[in-house]
Length: 115
Image (cartoon, rainbow, N blue to C red):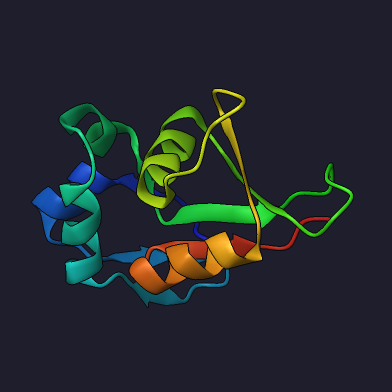
């Protein structure tokens, strides 16, 4: 779990392609992933989107599902995966969607298993 998250624009401008986890590990972000994601975002989204993107278990769903919380995060991922948003700050994903997202941006997605 990252200690803090910078915006996509901050990562692009600073050249610092790392983040630190709570246990002190330094994790790298792939510059190609950052640039590919930036190409799919508006300028406003680049200023608001926090990296890495959190995908967590969705316990409100009866079947196995994942979710992305946050207005900007949900909007960007819905655009990338061509998924419809039913709630402004929440996007439900299923396992194939998660696989696609991780395949496109492997270093930018963190999966959280919440109770």
